[in-house]
Length: 328
Image 1 (cartoon, rainbow, N blue to C red):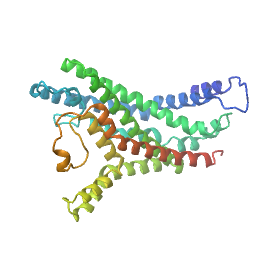
Image 2 (cartoon, one colour):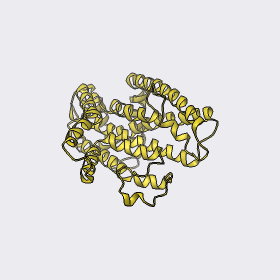
Image 3 (cartoon, helix red, strand yellow):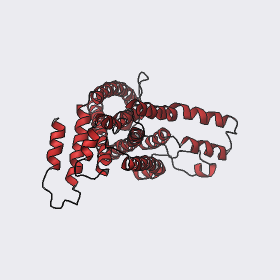
Image 4 (cartoon, one colour):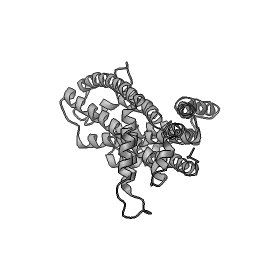
């Protein structure tokens, strides 16, 4: 009730032009959606579970980086990045943690974004206010991204802080920028699953159906798609470069594969390519870590593909929502 009262107060502010949309009403909608996420028991329980899982992952990472620090040589300047990529084997590292749990967080924030409000009758009350309809769908996406960004950056900076306490040295500027780039990339990856869940929430009237559909797509790309590509590659010559390129391109249809390749390049600077190298490329190459600019250039196709998939899902959601009959 308090949320709806503040929402109405924000929309009842004096308007200088009744026919013109006001940006303030959009941010009132965003504030309402963020408040709904924060006050939701489902989201709070999920955040607690994510925090507990993160602390366990941090403990294993700190144990692994302590062992790595004892074996490291003086020329290795990327010790801090190992905090995100190594583990002692008992739990996955922070990188795998984000890759596996991130889509579930995005699905949880978007699978009932529209259909639950439609079934409760609150969506028609919001539409009856003097605001453009596209503000509603835009505000739901922006609010979900704000919640995800706050959570990911909080966890990322928590890892950095604990790493500084345990290792005793701060990250280098290059390492810090790589970590920030990794967090931004993770937000783009989870944004795809948010938009996919919102799309299903518009397409299906039942929240359970949209949730199961989103989870089914996530399971397909995370587990079964690689099995299908593996079956296709069994009858092919693995030594043939064209076959290897075909298999790699098929794997890149999966958003999880795109995210895995991009994060591997960002957090492991010693990796200089994502595919097999010819002898002509190997001869004369100087071994060493790539600078951040070259790593970002290398992952540009993966980043563009993730953003394109997100925009496609959002465009379809936008079109369906604008044509949807809302008033009961």
